[in-house]
Image 1 (tube, one colour):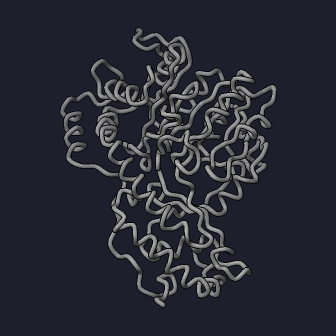
Image 2 (cartoon, rainbow, N blue to C red):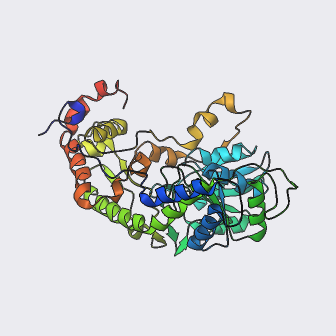
Image 3 (cartoon, one colour):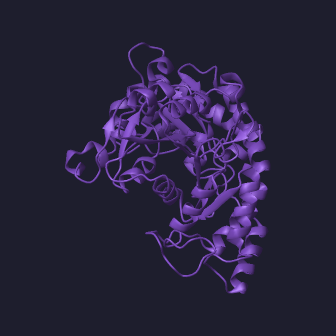
Length: 424
């Protein structure tokens, strides 16, 4: 039995997987074109930003898309366009990146945390319904990890109570629900183009909608409150949340590459799901076809599985923690997310009572979100890696590393106390 790299043995893999973000000469060329144009920012006819908005809208099959400086900025614009004001409540998933909630807080609103489904990690309609009050003005549905939320049941709840749905599509570009792109299913869709996302310019975002009036407000709010195509007048309060021409140019190239990337990642994820499903204590997040036929495409930001230490150990006395398991994988040369996941209501900005004066929140339900966060392991872009783009012959090392750790699980358990003192 080979000693684990975490315990002093040789790592199983020493060569890198594919990197992320990805680029080639096409990005270099368009950056040079923008540089030479001497039009590096602003909103103008014939711009890279305008072209990307047209191309993104066509891809998503929506009439309106507005590029913005980040996904968080996009959420703030979407909520303000819907009229969210101080004291209004917005239902958000208890399991999401904190920006989903802080976008509400930054407008003076109150995020109300509602629980998620343990299989998909997306907000459930029953938890949303239980969280709604007379102050509720919107629901944010997050398509976490690229898996679409159940937009049918969420739509029924939203229609019943007369509240709009904002889709947080930061991790789901390319995912479809019943054949329709995420972002096109709710009242407003918001995308992020930060470094880990399916297409990226380092930062950036987009806000999309079918509604003509909302589209005009969105375009105004991202540009100092100026009406789109208007004069220099500023009839409402807005921000400067525009995107640069450099970023828009990169995103045009990345969008053209998205289809091939999604196909490669789907192949890699299917291989890992098949090979790892037999390892005790590991439960890969189900593949779309196995989970819900309405998920007609997965955004595949990452490959996720839950880690049950007792089942993995098999001794019935509790094995190594998920943080030590992740550290063992990293030591074997497998890139895995380092960050311990935290349910959103447990983030200090909401959990620390000293913050309540400026970040009020309410938790309707979060037990399943907390359980999922305590056991989830993420591979792929969530770990800053292009690993899912690799062929199964390369991904076989992921499987071998997990098997190596499982074979050494008793050694890992015995070293748990010592390893607990190491930053893992």
